[in-house]
Amino acid sequence: MSLLRDLEGVGADRFRGGYSRHVFTDPELQLRAWFTEQAQRRGLDVEQDRNGNLWAWWGTPGPDAVVTGSHLDSVPGGGAFDGPLGVVSALAAVDELRATGFRPRRPLAVVVFAEEEGGRFGVACLGSRLLTGAIAPERALKLTDPDGVTFGEAAARAGLEPERIGPDPDAVSRIGAFVELHVEQGKALEPLGRPVAIGSTIDPHGRWRLTFVGRGDHAGTAAMADRRDPMLPAARTVLAARSAAKAGTRATVGRLIPVPGGTNVVASRVDVWLDARSASEPGTREAVDEVIAAAQQAAADEGCEVEVREESFSGEVAFDPGLRDRFRGVLGDVPVLPTGAGHDAGVLAAHVPTGMLYVRNPTGVSHAPEEFATDEDCAAGVRALAAVLEELAG
Ligand code: GLV
Ligand code: MN
Ligand code: MN
Image 1 (cartoon, rainbow, N blue to C red):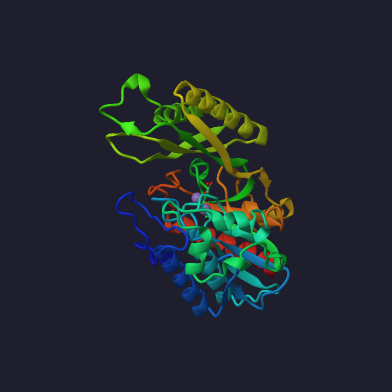
Image 2: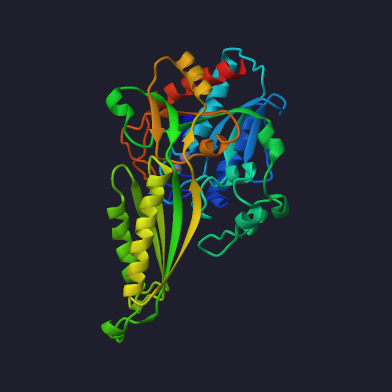
């Protein structure tokens, strides 16, 4: 897809492969500048809200707007499609609608949400959570990146006013409907031979941070029997996550940081992040409780302390059934898929009628460089999005 090709190379990560485009870092700011330029070229009016989300308006910003878009930030070493596909498809859908002479009766906006992945400050969908009041600004401002830079500091450097960060009911009240197009994360469409699907639900999911504290020491001289090595309970927690993940539950440790992190050093502290998801909230909580109990036992066995913090939790989301029916009215009998992936659409769904479209991913892989969609399927996604926007805004 040609608009997506414009972004190739921006934030390419030579160490991890794929892309690292974290909020308010150079690559992500470059993508924002690209978006602003593309939107202005189309005669859309671009504004940044007080939480760092970008809005490009076709028509006067106002109530009952039809809004579409996604995010431009990535996970560390992520794929090219998760986020950017929804943004470039929104711009391409505007082009497609314009080419047919369509004039929206309702204001239409393309939005780019900030820090959807939580790849820099740890809390996913930070921009949409702040917008809707799902996270307190006092907490968000204090979140830190791996270098100790706070969200407030990074936002100020990017030109935001930290004291204005927080719920923005005026911006929310303008949204009449929100539609997010996204690359499929999983492989349901390939066997069905279908390029596009409609979203039904998002599984409850969350992130927990377990901090194990022991005693740092010399790897060559500290007797094995005397050690209080936090890496041991950390390792047992990884195994506990795998065994807690039964019957459709997913539990993952994808990030673990030993401090100070030397080959010849017994760590003094290890931070472990647990990501857990399941079709039901009790199922998710049960798995997390099992992992936490195992972590506490493992810490006690090694003479270590453990502190557990829930960094974020998102309950089950069911997208608006009325909107889904209207999507099917214009798209026909396309598949309807649940997902285990979180999205800004999931945050918005608690406030405004919201729906999602997915574009087939033949690899089934996401959050990794193998994430993919063909040009033909991306074009089918743009046609589907344009048809849905025409239905909603016409
Ligand atoms: C976001 O992509 C998530 O599901 O974590
Ligand atoms: Mn993602
Ligand atoms: Mn995404």
